Length: 367
Image 1 (spheres, rainbow, N blue to C red):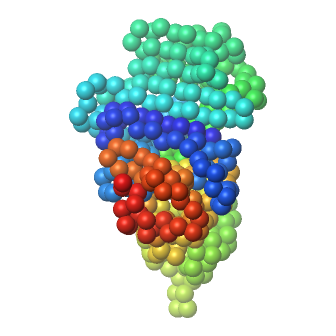
Image 2 (cartoon, rainbow, N blue to C red; image 1 turned 60 degrees about the vertical axis):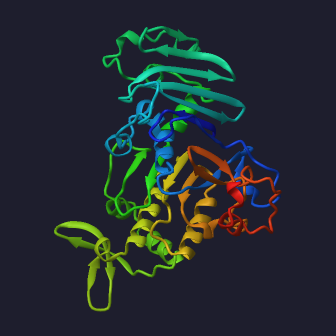
């Protein structure tokens, strides 16, 4: 699991910003949102232009050079460097906990998102380090001592990625193996009607094709009903291609044409929740942008019950800020380049009976 993440000089984050999943309190309620003493489900609030999308892009940056998965460089990574930069270096640091191992991966990139350096620590012990400017290489990875990094045909490819992909055998309990598998299964997507995503797989695919080919049409119909959307779905042939249809009394229509924007957001969510069983981490941006508040509550509960992966979602909906749904150390506020939980944003001791939304609107967390 991701324990702590920090980035400096990336987009609107000129100063270092730290997202700490280990800052938990001893609340006796909603304990299922905490896993292995880390926040497993997190909801981030922030004004427009506070950097919620940029934070997701920063966290997912690790997938752009350690995996071959789908990326969105042109959309999320334009103007990579902070506009008021002093130093033309972006610094990233990821700290993970896997079983009894702690993995720390740090790297630097330039204004063109090209690697400058990489370092990997396991339990505070340096096991890998490479400087792309000087070619200085420190390799203490036992399984990779015979790897010749000079054989990289593309000198911009991550050396750590090259080592991992060219090492013949990794023990099942290898910290590097577990770390790389976690990164390979990280996912970012946005709750919009188009399937914008990063991570998990190398190419985009048609969502309707996936649902039909995997015989998930009835499951999708039930999911929509659970969300309060009553559709009589069927498989139709449209210009020689199978797609999802909606049966009405007098005719059948294509689902993607007649469905509302909110329903299409549910369509996207259903797809990703069924697309892979190995998701490790999800950053879901603007998750309820098109939802009625009751649907927002349902989807939040739905995601919170998916305890097998870490989730970070963003929202503007203060109606969701309640101890009935989450807890003060799982709600965070991003503002002015700083991010803190509600629990750390007030001197008051927050109890289960407190009205978090009322405290928020009253300015309690701005003191």
